[in-house]
Image 1 (cartoon, rainbow, N blue to C red):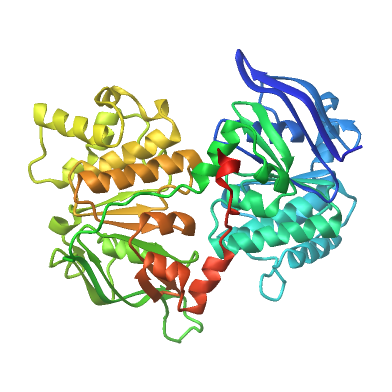
Image 2: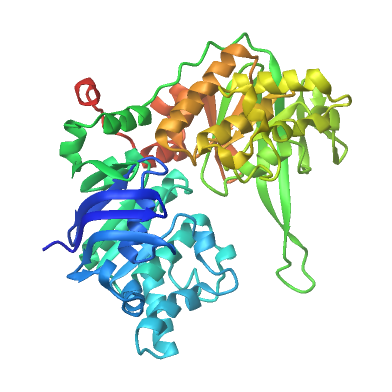
Length: 533
């Protein structure tokens, strides 16, 4: 008998069918992956396995974990099983952790709830567990709070909480989506080690097919609540049968057709920029310290050029971007756009700032949900000395929406009426509407499914053909940067350690850090045309 057996799992909420006859198994010591686009039912399947279905959900079928049918088990028994027999790792560690509790208390809490351990014993076990996940007490004392850790370190704390009692099954729901490539590789390697060490079953939920192909023993592909294909990873990659599976993998390997770059003409010039932040004094009478987030950075972005910026979390990408946009002053160097300084003294030059726009990672979070699309996309008009009104305003809205593949009639709708990909198209329309000289794409496709991501990248390439588009594309997804940029900058510890033509940097990296980033990035195996046809 398998560790986990899901048989004919059907789930509905009200009149809406969510899951239909889902079947899957996970063996002890095995890594199984559920993949598919948003809305496919991946997370609801995981919640059903944990017995955490929302109020009003109606489920039938069987979810059997080590001989216990979860759907037929009372809540008080499930509370004991969660933590003891099954654990869960969520996508966003900062929201999964309590910001006012230390990491030691949060790991010890699970031990105290489920065992008869004393507080001292629980803290000793918490210390050992944190050490096992790569957070030794000499460097990461139990008294630290989540905000004092990096994203990858916080994810390790969440994993420590989930494995503190060595559960038989661990469910990881998009555990690496928000992490940079080297941290992602470390977390995946840690999960692999834990599966072997504890002989634990791991159910991984992800839309990153490169991770799935390299990490999982078996793959389950879901679409609209149905399992459309499943099998051992190697066999499924060589012998895909369902068109949806083939479409997913084809979209993951999608190449973008960028138009040729125009002749060089400087647009953005960053010269010897330095950005420092003050740090606390180390002694009562000692001098205030400083942390150098951006250290003597220089580069140029040409008009019509597509420039990438990559590096791990904390390398200075966001700080540099805020300085370019005139949102943070710099302590040294100069930033100019179209020959004019972004700063007038220590204050931003508003005439230059209006020539730049940003597309953010989370399209829903970057909009006011109470406003209609026509008001949302025209927000940049407040930067103009004479904003268009009446028919001119309507025409600008219609053109911006049409350029991103939406209908002018969508201007009267609200943001909740659109899918994630459509919301990102609206975000791009907002950035385009005042025809800026430079657009900054800040992780603009990292939260999107592979097929939607391919559509948005194609849209960006199409816009480059329609408009004189220049952009700075910031991402930790190297596969995306490779297809959507002409040149790339590699940043580490506040410095640009390498820059050059994108394909040259990827095929022949000159700096060891660049080679490390490329080696850490998960790569889809070479799939034959026959497998995808």
